[in-house]
Length: 229
Image (cartoon, rainbow, N blue to C red; front, side):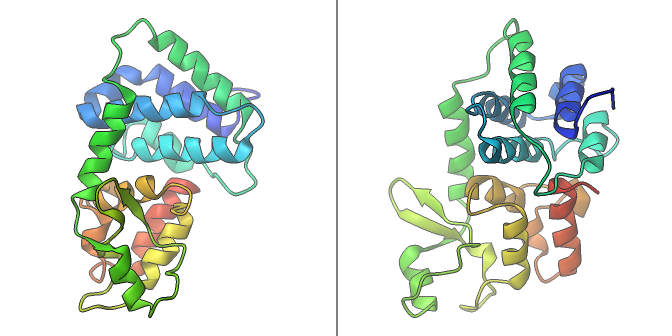
């Protein structure tokens, strides 16, 4: 880490320095999503530390598919992003500087199209309707930690992996991981974490490992992303 550099600006410097190799290691969709989330971070209003923190976490989620030995992934795994860690104007300005240098490179597809493609993929995963979830809770509001995605045609949808088979309640570990991932603020990012391949867990999606891998492994993988290994 260079003098005067915090964890957030360190990660962004490394993204800048290794952008070509990042492009080579990510799929087109993954790379476009990374650029989209960098733009969202750059657009964070000045002084809004909470929004900057959420946007920076979304950038980190976009970098999870990188192999463990990639310099940027190694940096992510060493960053500790605790609740009090400063993620604010310096990180936002560093992101704007990075994107300014990227302006000379070919632009990715339309941001809205990128987000729509990711959301469409997530909405095609098995899910419960809001009515089905309310029935399980006898009309009471479900826990706020549950991931709730909004389908433009079907309304609110709750990814089915969150619930034990046979009409069961949510897995305790799902609620714990969702709290770590701030699923109430970024349900799409949390859903993407659960339903995408994760090298921390052998390459498969964490949702497929519920009841198979120990709960501590799933929590540890989420904490490693958000707080550092």
